Amino acid sequence: MADFSRPGSLYGAVDLGARKQALEAQARREAAGAQGASSASIVDVTEETFTTDVIDRSMTVPVVLDLWSPRAPGSAQLSPVLEKVVGDLGGAAVLARVNVDLSPQIAQALRVQAVPTVLAIFQGQAVTGFQQVLPEQEVRRWLDELMAAVEQFYQANPGVRPAEGEEAPAGPPADPDLVAAEQAIDRGDLDAAAQAYERLLARAPGNEDARMGLAGVGLIKRTSEADPADVDRRLQDPSDIDAHLLAADLDMMAGRVDEAFERVIAVVKRTSGDERDRARRHLLGLFDALPSDDPSLAKARRALASALF
Image (tube, rainbow, N blue to C red):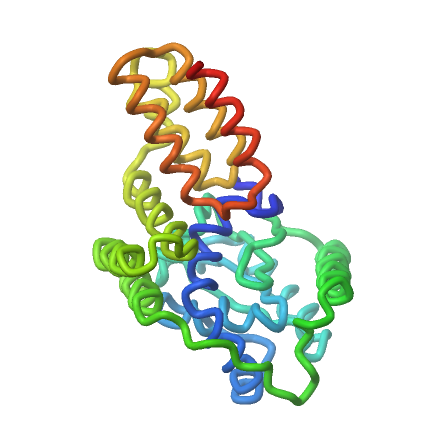
């Protein structure tokens, strides 16, 4: 299962962060209204409502995402416990339920390998989670730790704490191409999303949201049909460059950023000519999927320079 706790991981950058960036201004402007319109702490989520019910709401309140299936006995045990413990918080957190049988694209985007899976989404990113049936006492302990972490975040960033009963301050309107990319991702049209990001980059080459979004879309397209077991088998052949680069993509999608960079740098070290240049360009493309201040980038750039020279 992916590591959801790594700050700045690609998991957040692609699957959740890009969505947050695309509609961040709207989310801030609409958060208070969305909370008021739906005061219930439990909501059933579909692929069409994921952005509104999960990403947008997570900008002001932690969202506990219950990925379940009627075919999984564990879901029948865990879901009622989640309803109880989240409900006891009186609206301080939201329980968002996703039937993975009816919304497979959400499960695919989140790299869900088994159900039940529980993720905590806050500020547009998955911050913690578990993949097993836990007794009520342990679920409460996990939720208490989540709420404590949320409170620490607000104490460290008092300016972003939503005032009770007040609407969050509106930011500048989101770029229309970012909104178009978000909408295309919601429809599952990755080509249209890429085109929207490319239009924005043509107008504003330094736009980080578009750069990360375009790189993220490319990663999703390259890995969407990959068979991890087949990739693992092919990795036994050091000359199978395609397999090693695809494995790096899968590492990135799972949040294993440093491992992905190390894997491609190893290819750079043992190749030459066109193959080395291909690996180098692939690594630079992976760099684009992260914020420019991500600490993993400086380390990887030094390692790349050492491998090249």
